[in-house]
Length: 163
Image 1 (tube, rainbow, N blue to C red):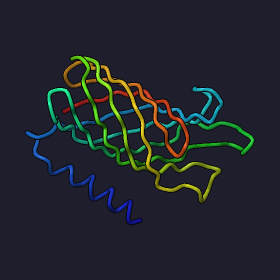
Image 2: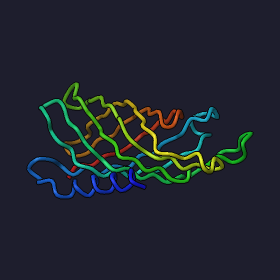
Image 3: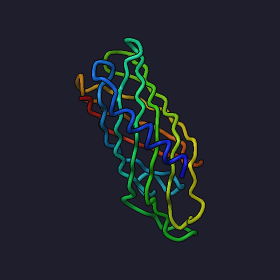
């Protein structure tokens, strides 16, 4: 409970950052968790992410963000039906621009993945990932990433808007 309170306090603190220092970032992602059944046969989650993008240098940006995801599919396995119920995370999106339109990023995070039927095993975990981002316009981008969450590989595709 203490970790959850810490995450909420940090996230609410972002609301008071002056707009001259950062841009509001909002995104939506589709994530497929790799339980070995094939990319589109595994449980999936729709994630919403909100944060602030800080421009550290011309090519390097840091975006602390809060992420909430909800399971949208499940699979049958030897363990029964596997379903991702919820995913909550506090993430730092560290992006380096290779060109004006292409960037790479690293995603260290602290999150909780609630899945069934694994009741009682869901804990706060550190995770990390990497990805590539394509800038469609100055304020709209899409990305593809791979993340390791609780020793489960996750492929994601997303759309991000800056305000």
